Length: 208
Image (tube, rainbow, N blue to C red; front, side, top):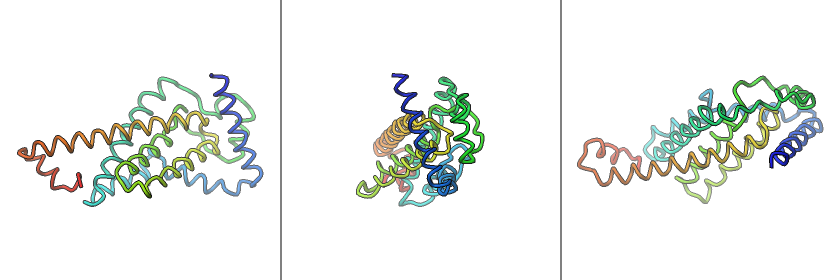
């Protein structure tokens, strides 16, 4: 199994490098901007959007589930799994060709460990939260951003493809847990409306 994963990782990274060479790095600036947008660790746009949704009654539900799901994902990925697995980044692997691929796209040095991808965790958590709480006829489109983000992390040679897949799984579980917590909070609130803070939650628009 491990040999298959290593072969899978290497083959895809080689494909992304060849793509960068064929396009003469034409798409690299755009791909860097994608990674920047989904950088949960620095609290950039995706997190800001999720928090902003909390301020509006009509979007408070999705904002709440997004924030909680990304928070759970951050705890799982950055505090536990990364430190336990302690996998080095592709450009730290000692394989000269991967180091050269990393340099070719002008990628920067990234700290912490590689497995799983924090970007994949955050994006999958957020988009699954949107899918669970919004109109599914359109909200499934959010998963296209997950794929795009995963592509960007591999293209920039800062994650192995298996890091991205694992991050997506962690993000999915995190969103399901967050949504479950939301449903539990809603149920508790509706059955305890005699409590002052439950009344506040009921009228806050969180459960609409």
